[in-house]
Length: 290
Image (cartoon, rainbow, N blue to C red; front, side, top):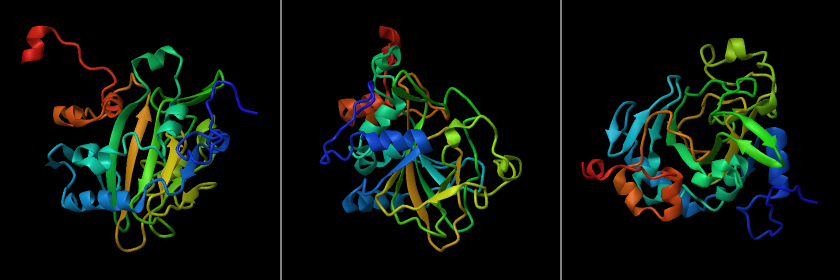
């Protein structure tokens, strides 16, 4: 028996569509893992692009890709990675997770949806080496417009849904993403937040009830940003390579002020263009010529 208001698939040959199992465990835990979301050639193509951006430092630009950090010892983020070429463009609406993300963001059949299905409000790849991590942050008790979780009227209504994909294996010692299952619904701060939170901790290791999410190259982790999350510190040699595409309501805006380039928008298919720019600017004729 399905829940009215959510469109499920029962066809095993449609791995990207939302299943009842996906919906149940996303609601229960705040995340699901999609194994083998990317094929080996897709992973290799993304790694080749990242090889070419390896030298980029925080604050530097390579075309429209920007070196960035959140201020922790979290490595280097390659913001606007969809500007780096076709391998990352195809991830904007990748069939392994697009329909799942669309269902979790929700809004279909409401005013929110009139402007388009979703908006990719942040998009970055990440290099993280030994000793680097990101501290615990978020949690359901910290309600904000951008990072909230709701299930109402038989539909998901998530303000930000993250798809994190691995471009190499992420196992013990590799600096895996860590989550506290169910914390997207918490009404109180985590007891360890005062000593292990953003301004006090390096990583989430040792946080009570936190679990490491180990991924193989090509796997994708889909989680609501309202869940308490962070990572373990990388202990092994080499790099942890991932990318995160954040999906939210079509009326959202970039918190960092990034905008897709005109060149990128011109070459994207209509759906991808709409996901990056749900509403094209409306300008008077004089302004449009400037």
